[in-house]
Every structure is written in C-alpha cells, then in structure tokens.
Amino acid sequence: MRIGLVQSNTGRSADENIQELDLLFSPLKNADVIVTPECTNIMGYTAKTDKLSSAADDKVVQFICNWARENSTYVIIGSAIILNEAGKPVNRQLVVDPQGSIISHYDKIHMFDVNLPNGEIFRESDRTIAGREAVITNILDQKFGHSICFDLRFPSLFSALSQAGAEILVVPAAFTQSTGRAHWEILLRARAIENGAYVIAPAQTGAYRHSDGTTRHCWGHSLVVSPWGEVLANLGTEPNSQIIEIDLERVSQARSDIPIIKSAQKIAKPRIVKP
Image (cartoon, rainbow, N blue to C red):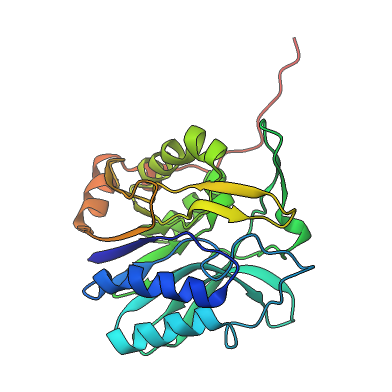
C-alpha cells in the first residue's frame, strides 16, 4: 500500500491553506491513501475571532473532497476544526473516498489541556468538544485505527483499536516543539511496537499564530513507523510530502513473532499493600 504523508504549515487563511495543500498533494497522485496533519483547515483557532463551518461548508475540507474525487484517491484529513451535527466545535478526523464523499469520522477524545515546563498553557477543551467513541475504518481491505495528537499519550486507545483489528494506526498531530523534541518519536515507536501495527503520523510544522496572540512553533518530523518500531520516513521540519510504501504482511509477522494482542490479559484493579 502506498501512503502519501503530508507535512504542512497551516495558518488561519483558508485560501492560503488550500494553496499549500495543492502543492503538497501534487507529488502524491499515485498514493493509495493520503494522510494530512491535525488542524488541516486552521491552526490557532479561537472562538472569539474565527468562524467555523460544517464539513460541507468548510472551504479546505471541500477542496480536499474535490481533489480526492478528481484523482480517485482516498484522503484521511488528519483533523479539521469544524462544527458537528449539533453545531458544536469539534476536532474531527475525516475519511474521504475516491468519489469525494466523507465516509467516516472520528472526534478527538483526549483534549490537550496542559501546563508545559516552558510556561505554555493550552486548554483545548475551552474551544472544542471531546469525542467519546473509538473508530476503525476499512480502507482498501485494511483496517485503519483513528487517533489525533494528544491521544498518542493514552496506550489504552491504541490497544482497543488493535484488539478490534486495526493494522494501521493514524496519528496526525500538531505537537509543540518542546513536547515534540522530548516525546514525539519515542511515543510513536512505542505505540507501533506495543500493537504490532504501522503508525502513520503526519504533523504540522513551523510557526503559527495562537489564540492568545503569541507565535508558537510546531515540531514537524512527520513519521511512518513499522510494526517492529523502525522509522521508515521522517519529513524533517519543512513543509513537505512523500509517498511511503508499506507491506501489510509485516503486521501479521510482527504479531506472530510477539503475540502481544493475542496474549493480552484483562488486569484486575491492583491490590495495594500497606506495610
């Protein structure tokens, strides 16, 4: 399977974001599935200044749907900040088929509410509604398990996806430079090894204007990791795109060599010993 990996520097302007995506998608016309980063349609969203739309009315989402149809390609929009069916803002991953139709979606479960050591404070839950449901989509007879960015830190989600049959774990992100430098690669490789699955992790890169008016930077380094934990692609720190061919037989081999999923046991609540 040929995976098109996209690393972008998304901003607030839909027209500028579309121009960048048009350039990044151009070398990927022979890909079977293209995957974009988190916040593909807008970065640094704030409810005070940015007006959101539904997927059907979002200019960037519709550009991607049209591109998928014109090029007969599946595209997983890593996430788009849009309004859900109830008119509430969500961080939503969208799967677009070669006819340009949205066939599946996943809403980010774990919100990025953190106080980082460098003084940065993020409260994603102030701006978007958390999802509640894990999702797997069958694409070209392969099971893709969905996640978004901060979800990466919660192994139980990936374990549930893999035990339900996911062979490819999609982890689009917009990691900050401080967290990216410390944790990005090691967490992605761990999730791949733990689950004997491919990990596809397209990321935002470069500077963006955040809701508090400050300029912040994303880590980049979009990765593809094999079921054995090998880094098969690293896109560095510039906007970029690349096709990576993956061999799905390696998933079966890894799970046969180390049958973690088959051997997983339900663990009871730990007994606490008080000396």
